[in-house]
Length: 393
Image (cartoon, rainbow, N blue to C red):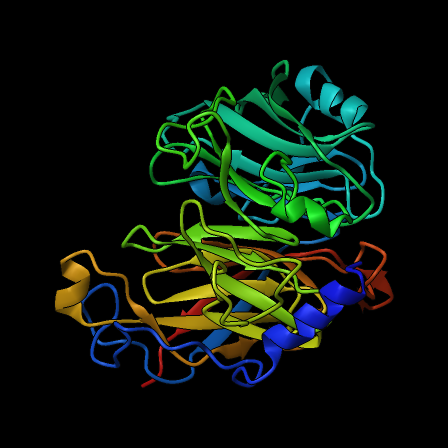
């Protein structure tokens, strides 16, 4: 919690700002064309939902595999499983790296086995897998080889450790960026001062090589820090122009969608939401914490999607821009947010966008904060959903 002075600054940061839920303006915003150069989806889209898999125990991370399959992490049991498009869920064999992950992981509050990323350049059946876990002393990123034929995970290699841990605000989302480097979202570990400490790995977005070294081109050549001033980032993604987005939990007032710039400072704990303060970068969209609490995000050619826990909905923030400007490498602007799946499936933890724009969404009602849903007296949560979007006519 911030002290009295910090709380005053938070309130000051929101005074006079646009109403919560309003998207900030963009110099390239336009209703003339979407990022793909076609007409934008101007208006509300509709979402058709199909349940792919059920009875997943506290799922957290979601990474695509060939054939419409997904690798899923289970936060509290520290297990990994492959979810098939047929609805079958196969846990990895309880040996080697899978057992090592479980032995290393300590499920405490929001901590446990969290993010997962699979190298998209691997052809299979062997795949390089990255995992983010909470341990006894720290949070760490691990690497192992997944054999998809026999569902085994090889021995673990530590990529990056020493990330501060706590029962809350562990961050945990990891993603391989379009540049091939690994991006790691961390929380402030319950100590807001960590976010403004350049020497701390907490409250940051980190950018490292697959071996854990600071990636070439980082703001500080000897540091893995890519951006700072974050409270608890759990969503990372990129649009077709290469612009990076992150979803972030606010404390009491506003959750955020940010565009991430290398070396950028996003204000926590001095500012929550848009503050228009020198030295800090404002979000491009924001919501009351009761309407969002965004975890995973996905970015398509036409929108950013945020899976929301407390808000129990999937937020869509349209991407708009002049086709000629986007073709020249300029980033598109933003349209009015739209809420999808509101109250239909409870808490939403993760979302992934396929190459055809189809979304897959993980629910998160078995984490102790939600109400697991039942059908005919049987608990069906948590679930993996397939969401097909239809643009407005």
